[in-house]
Image (cartoon, rainbow, N blue to C red; front, side, top):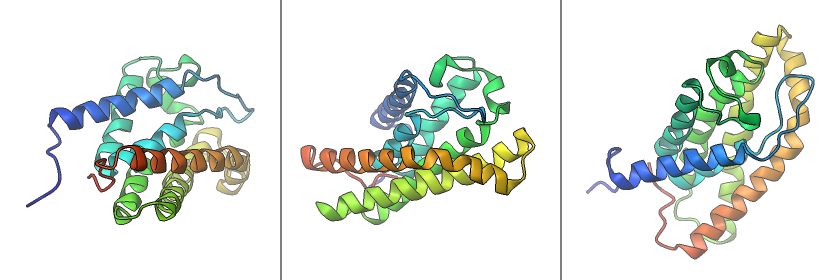
Length: 192
């Protein structure tokens, strides 16, 4: 018997919408603008949480829902940005990377679904680092290079400014995942 819930279940749709709203709400926290045209925001933390807590497919869908809202013009990105123009800025690669970053976080967490306690913290930390930093940055650096007409190496070096803050977000994500697992023992971290 399969343990996955159909993508159309009301619970799945509720979780996807809830995490899309969480990512949007984290955009309300004031951003730090850099000369690169890529702001420092808390929204990546929401992407990490969506993947780690919802699983790969639902995490991907939560980010996709947010990005569809952005494309339709809703001001869901930090600083109240929205519209198709957000997808042609230097940060566009990072936005696309959010989709695959959430998926990677969820996929890694599924592999460690039975983990509890410290092992769960370590799994969530690894998942958020790989998905929320490595995967997101692969897309983000490529997009920055393309839009800002920078060589990949320079775009990668310019992106290093984001790493310390994103490492803090990884720790926060791991703490939240561990807290959710303790507080809601029935929460399944092996969701798809």
